[in-house]
Length: 96
Image (tube, rainbow, N blue to C red; front, side, top):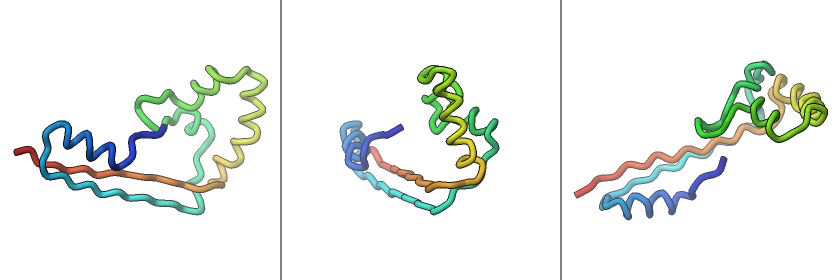
């Protein structure tokens, strides 16, 4: 899920009437992910507004496609292969 960039966040705070705004952005990139058991991964969601991964697979792919995709992805998930990228924005503001 993608969201607004840092300037959109600041603009929304200004539009809401905040006069003093501070935004701290933390970006982290790691060459390895933590290994995750496949059954747990299927129940995970990257955001409360996004359904769990298994639900998305069932909605988007047919049974054969989902099985093929899982055969490819499962070893990567369980071994921790890939990049872990996170970005967090901490916005604080004061309203007069």
